[in-house]
Image (cartoon, rainbow, N blue to C red; front, side, top):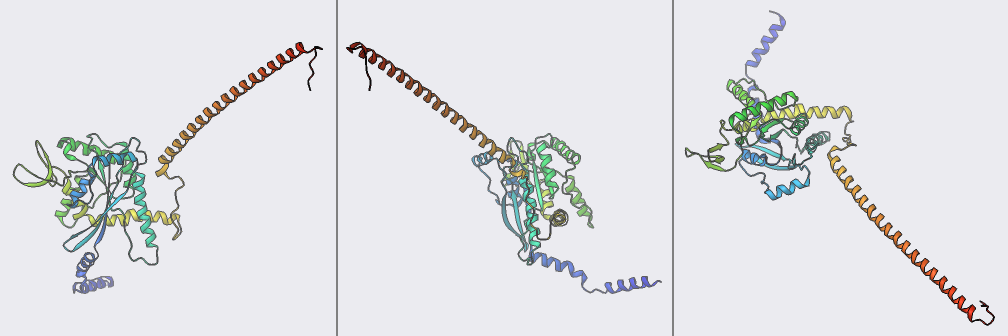
Length: 394
């Protein structure tokens, strides 16, 4: 036996004696339970795709108040993409989760949707930037972490494939955050049409090299591995959202939507993938979403910034801010139209002044001719009446 084999044998014997290393998971469990965690979920998609209903169904509470039709139409006239943050604190079995839901009303709701995803991308990068600046501070207590851990991109169930807007937006967002594609309102498609639509969406995602979140599959637990494969096979997730309870034909009260032909159940795997998506976000892969954000997306942003900036130096502002390009062009066009309108008014006023001047000059000339005519008549009359035939003027 060599010296190295003897040393390894001795180390194995020492470890097998039991010094308490096996209690480390219990210690970590206590720390995590006491500290809790932060989870930030962003929902992106066109209005009417059920983002608000899904969040409220997922959390079994009305975290986001649905907009009335009048308010929705008024928002669409603003032609801006807003970023709304809704916060909640969830507690289950003494474990706390500080949840942040980031909503993006106005996304993709206009005729011209060029660069409408830029406010979303800017928000994601701004959260990375704020966390990076806090890391560089001498005192790092009370660090606010609003980094987005998962972005649910809601796809309208048109039955065809992804739109060009979806492709460009998903490319930009997927490069910066864990992107999870979701087919909204799955109950509007038949099972066959839904399977075909899922395949077309995945074909476009693969062809366009869109980066989406890939959860780990292999696990020491065989049942966990089978469940992970089942979750991955459901991508993109087809969901049904509903906060209302309805009664099924067999007398069960479930969350779903009532139709003349029956009930579309939210938590029925044969009807939609809601349970699988909920398991991915909360029950099985929440920690992986958080760690992937920390170790992949945030680290990529941090590395890029550190290569181009000095320590503590603020992020340089973009000279060409695409976010306001459309608004700037609109203001410039409005200003140009107003200037043209004022120029036309000035020209009309100038023409009126010129016409008035010509009229006054003509009247003055007529008066002048009349004066000359009167002078001539007076002179003629004076010459006739004068005894000497002469008229003298002073």
